[in-house]
Length: 136
Image 1 (spheres, rainbow, N blue to C red):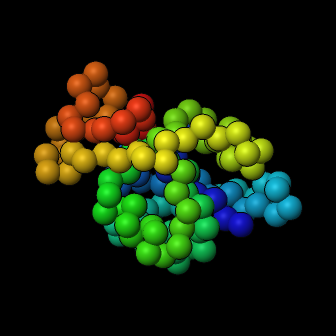
Image 2 (cartoon, one colour):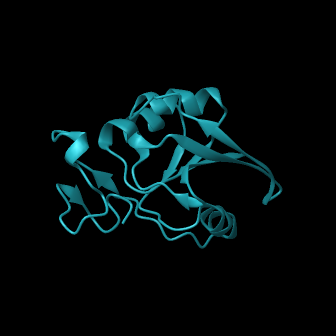
């Protein structure tokens, strides 16, 4: 199994469509056997599903993610665990242990707004719904 996590400075990057890199985890028999960093090459949002599919990813752990990207991931058969924050390595270990806390209804619907003004870390949610909707 191959797991991808939007990645920045050891943590889960909070907005799937704006990540510049993923940390990839190769898993065999419930154990991580290898990791590597994959750059997104400037791709964003729904296009990232194709990048992950080409890389052979089976599972994505992320923070906030829009409906279009969720649909694209579903279309290519990638299982989604959204609304997760914190250290990427710990999230993968929690998933493997069956203890990952995630939000099955996670979404971020700010896409009608200018991305440069959106801040998933601000106290105003700018249309991001749900606990952890933008990776908070």
